[in-house]
Length: 355
Image 1 (cartoon, rainbow, N blue to C red):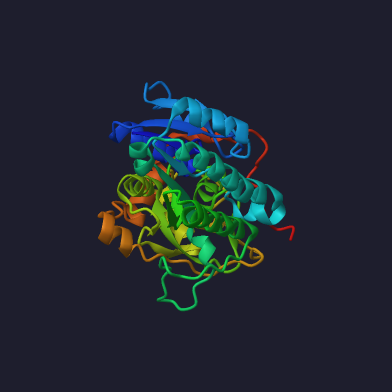
Image 2 (image 1 turned 90 degrees about the horizontal axis):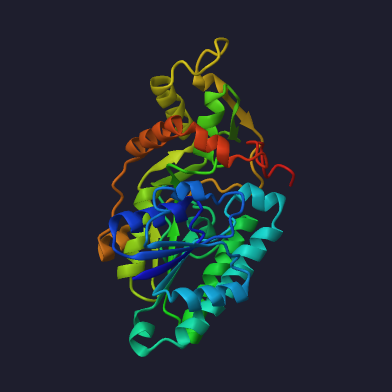
């Protein structure tokens, strides 16, 4: 099987590429524009494999997409290319509209044209798997509520609204044109190779440098944390075994308040890197600083992932404790990677505060 993965140089995309090359016999075409968050260093372990190919292409470029489909003849598409940072979407929503909505439309049309000219056997087997987020569902009301595949959409940020729009487009292309699509909505991912603007790597790197650890509001926002390699296994399972037209929620069964996450990172660093702090700082937890909350910040997300567990037999292998330990250890061992991916355009400054 040959799989075209958009956004394969990003955080989740690169984990999917590494998983497929390492654990299956399938081939991968990685199509990525290489924006600030896409980094080919995350794929060094597979870059010379004969089953891996790279195409630097923008999903908004229809002619380039048509060429890639014609040349590589994929059996499936896994669409992960997206602008994905909520705070960046508050500061500059235009890129999110362009990539997440117009880009998804352009990719759907290129995939549809390609799919329509396949022979009947390949046409029936073809899949278009759209990877999305639990943020499209908005905020949960009660402390016990969970997002299910039937939860109505109520996005709060420009980012989540753009992803909700792309989900609707994918479903429309299935219903209108018969394109064999699947959708997954995941909770917060974390793990190795995460660009350092997101909470967990940001806290790790700031803490190691003795810098402030900014916490939005009271830090009581609840997220369900999913280890990225568990997510990669789930995504491969959906594209190969999922039922066409279905949506699958993917979560880690790990609900934590943001402040709990930061405390856990501080405690792991105290154990694993006790000598990194400057002498005048008493401990990693003392670096925690509370800052004004993000505009429209959803308080709680949590996913009911029972459908994918029941129907496809997937369950996360990592607990939050085991996954976070692996993540902190990886960053401690790969500080040079962190330095290289931060090329100066992002200096771990606060994003999304200008609204």
